[in-house]
Image 1 (cartoon, rainbow, N blue to C red):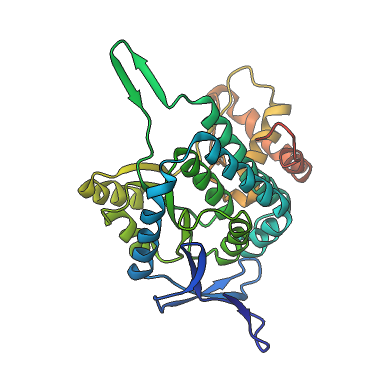
Image 2: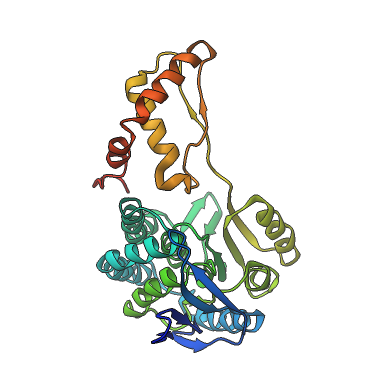
Length: 329
């Protein structure tokens, strides 16, 4: 449930999405959500606790009994439906990201278009991947592992929600998602898309809480077979260690910000504006931002001069990098 008080005009979120319905939070901790561009409180969210997480895990486990036996075409149909509804709400998803995250409209829209297309990419992979292979007398069949716990970061929350759910659906897994507790606006708009897509109850459950509470329950709960986490190295180390107790399959996307490398023959008129745009996209708040630049020592002074010159044209360069293109995803 999301309400807005007449006095404060602040959105209030007090429910989680479990077994196909919005249900009241068992957890009672309340967190203020701050618009990073002006420091104003724009929402209050009641955080989930371990009991909320356990309810969601139980719902996903019940749903897996049937969803884990679905065919490729049944899963593909769900992925196409998710693509359709998310595509239809790109504007709302973009607006939520800009308000809550402070990202630029251009960058946020590219990510939300990518969120919609993630479902088509997963469908394509599903159709192309053989689920049974035979070598001589040996036959290997790929089967869904069970309930997947999906943990997403604050930046580009809706994109990660879509990408992780798409992969899980394609694999035949049911899910419990712990989105960033700092992203209730994005999560709610995205959940309305999920509800519009009319997924089987229990396929997608979402509980927003702290990582050391809800995330920890997902990692240690024996009914969760898989963890997919995007975030910091320190938390990833904890998940890898604690997940081993129940032999979970764990996928970690940690850190980021790899460097750009300029070779000896680089054309600086082209390379430097592009390097600046990649480094500063979305104010540098992107795991793919190349915020380091490695250059040949012999060209260091030349590169420094080129950077200073290119900064004057930087606004135009970043618009070009962020310009929507049909081949981007």
